[in-house]
Length: 378
Image (cartoon, rainbow, N blue to C red; front, side, top):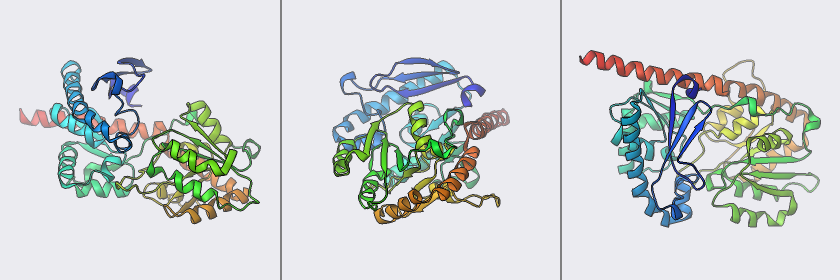
């Protein structure tokens, strides 16, 4: 939506196999180099998880920040943008603070940098970035409170999660389209996604329940999780990263989508995974951890007409509770049907069009506010 409403350029770090410049449908991608090619992998996935997986990657951090700040400065000089949409407080927000102070910003945090990075110096830097923004968007109400606690006025903080491209999600409305017992997990294989807890829970499912698990995603814990899953045999399949077509097929043919998120030792946790919204859009009932953001979408709702939740919530990290929830849904087709229909209905309000139009309004307001402030100074 932003790409069609504005002349958009996406500035991002180079990743292995990436191109320095790409023309996409409606926008341009520019990637900056920051380290010798052979070792340049800090931004290939989640930066914090990459650093935890291989501490030697900290050697890339200073040049990553410097190269990013210089790339922002060049982009501001060459493009003279009306507004910048900054994704992540750290490091991208710090890059903008250093190199784009004269341009209005909208800052979006997905949770990792807000929940983690809690030392006093980093909290100070995060506050500097967020207070400079015209608006800050977050994924859930708890994140909103955390941003306000960093000194940002309440009226500048909006709960506005990422949108789902509903057109690419296949609805599995017919019960016959669902593979009996199929569970699907989608996400990076990192601590906060809770796949270890899920595998523990599956080992305790009653023998009478026929099940299988498709794990879609990759990450630093893949080898460890594959080893943990070995006793479960061929029932568990690790697919790695998948394109939208295959992901849509797996979601539409699953009986249950599982998001067993936990709070990582660093304090990081999920805000609201887009994959969860995609599963709901496919009409697939959810089993998820009872965490802020996930709870509102799966079990909450302000519409009095909504009588059915989109799935079941369990205590984060509680393998026994997860086993019980999975057993309940796998054994009750009528319950799965009701929750799947409710999931699809709820997902409509998180469509790319619905969410994107709100982001466009915020960006336009940022531009208008900056122009009004400039006019008042003249």
